[in-house]
Length: 385
Image (cartoon, rainbow, N blue to C red; front, top):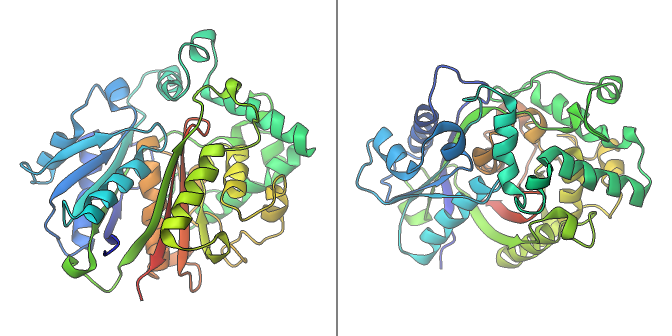
């Protein structure tokens, strides 16, 4: 059985796109991916999105996107897994190809987060990824839940405030020369430590920004791919869930769903964590980035900050992490994030990542996290030789 391959990638710059609609962004990314794939014939469209109904007043995105790119008539659906909606779209597109139901599927992730008059609207929309009855109703916000995780992690492993700064500093450094990144400026430890408190101990520079963006992939089989010179195989994928309400988990310093999803993805790929040449983590908050690295099995528990500080996660290091700046600096248009991760990974593995290129990367992994770790999807990609 042929594993699915990525034949084309496309994405928009992440920023506040005041002049472009949700449909415009999705269409731009989709058309770029189709062009990159040699304009493959598409059998179905899967859209990853979390908040369009709340923020943009628009659902039925399958029809919306299909019409916008001249593909009315093909099956089109939206999938949602909170902040992991993008990876969910890729997983279901990959499963459709793997099953033989479709030959080529277009996966599109899109989010238009700036179409609001008040940032509280975005906070309310993001909070739908938490447990409404037992967390949101009583005033919990997404930052406050992640602050709870950060405080527990710092206490358990005796981390200082500086220890959490290494990751965002690296992410901003990586994003400086990445054209599609949102925050293309460096920060230093002093700037990190003096950034405003969002929810103690969570600082501004621990948090990914909000922004608008779309990313797309053409997922197909090798025997039907029109452009065969830059194919990347989806070697494995895994998905898992955990208890929705953060406070009900017995250990705030583990992402059990992330561990399970990693195990399942590696099993399908018949690989191990030591085979990774490059890693894409979901660093929506610094502590979640550290927990991603632990769940992927590339660092010991409580040692992620040492790994980042050592330089091993640099583009030229032993295991590069988020060479394009990650959620923190590339940006985090929620429903599109998982596809940005996988698109960037595909460009890396096919040697087309331009200024952020990691030398001779053959195997990579992308972890996309929904909620505070309640829904996690992992993809392992491999270069097609």
